[in-house]
Image (tube, rainbow, N blue to C red):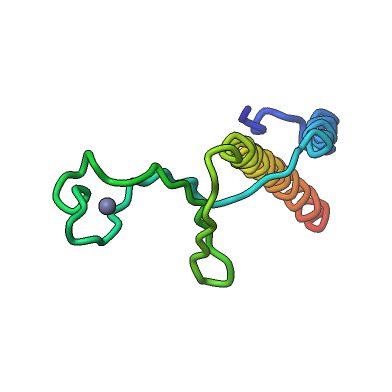
Length: 125
Ligand SMILES: [Zn+2]
């Protein structure tokens, strides 16, 4: 982020508003998204005579899982290999969404601070 310190204190600079509009428009390009973690794990089956019991290389799988928190609880969804690209893409979209939100938030804070300063100095006049 650029430092807003050197800006004239008479008005909210236009480039803030423009930047805000540009960021908002990026929401239009957003695709389906999912938060949480995608896991790929190898499992033991629990059968006493199975090789997976002692040899990590002979575990079964891979098994895919999507884990996320909802209302304080962890939710696990089993996935098949063929849907993994879909979920990786959705996960990427979620990071994009978060980054976009963060940038909008930072920008909002900057503008609000600026407006506060203006309003308060106007009050003192
Ligand atoms: Zn086994």
